[in-house]
Structures are given as structure tokens and as C-alpha cells.
Length: 200
View 1 (cartoon, rainbow, N blue to C red):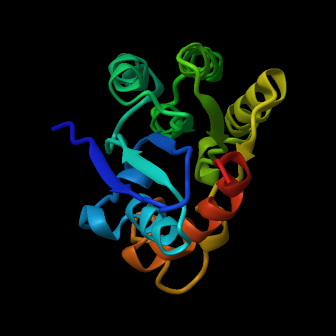
View 2: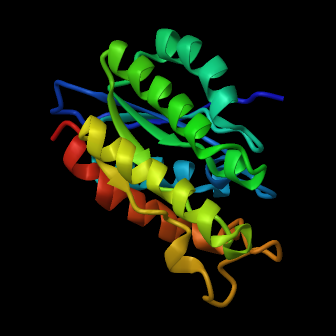
């Protein structure tokens, strides 16, 4: 079931302008096997509240979603929320299913175009797959994100799971999803990266 979480509106008393951040992602951002308030997007909103930022954070992430699913969901989200910033965190499930990297790239390219047409700035999240998918496929898959970022001159958020791998208690047994204990660390990573793209 699709759940869109409007996480928080941070009201700075002296602020004139406000940002709306729309997170379009999969289970890495949806809070897989945990309460929504434990997931990093909610923690990010809370952190920005403490910092006095005027931001609305909308987490439209759905576990299991793909770039094709994102294409179906993004247009009404853009129309409803009119975000100033869109964080795209999709492609992992496409890769886990072995879909052609060119198809993934084409779908992400369309997502970027839709967000920009709606007047939003776009930040793309880099995605990495487990090493057992074969060197050739991994190389082709990982190039998708760097190429899109370069071609569209987009900020590329480093894969936020990478610093957690191998750290005690940070990853679930599947080796793919971060635990609840890892969520504050992810929120901090994302906050530091996105801060320059928010209204001061």
C-alpha cells in the first residue's frame, strides 16, 4: 500500500522562503522493517527542525519500488506537493532484478526531466549492488548514475549505505538494508550533502 509521509514542516520565525523536499525512493528510504519515525527521512526532518530550517520533508518512498514505478508515481506527487527539491533514490530494485542498465538510465532520465519541468532541483542518489551480480553488469549499472549526474549537471549523493557495510549492528541480515541503528548516520550524511541546496 502506498503511503506518502509528510514528515515535518519546520517553521523558522524569521524565514521568508521555504523549501519542500520530495524523497522518491525504495526500501532504503522507506524504513524497511521499522517504524516510519525511525527511518532516516523522518530523522532528517527532525534534525532540520532543531537547526531552525524552514523545510517540508515529504517521504514518498515505497519498498520494492523501481524506476518504472517511480515514473508512474512522480507526476501526481509533483502536482500535489510542488517540491523545490527532489531526491531520487531509485534503481536498486531494477538492478537486483537484472534489468538492462540502459533501461534504468532511460527511466531515471525521464524522472529527472519530469522533476525539472515542474521547477524542482534534482539530486540523484548513487546506488551500488552486492558484488555477486558479476563484474560486467556491476560496471554498467554503476556508470548509469555518474553518467546521468554528469550529463544533467546534477549533484550525486554518494551511496549512503556504503559507509555502513561491515560495521557492527549497522546492516540487516540480508546485507542490503541498514538497521534502525544506522538511520541517524544516514540522516546526517544526507543533511550535510543537501544543506547547500536548501534556502538559507
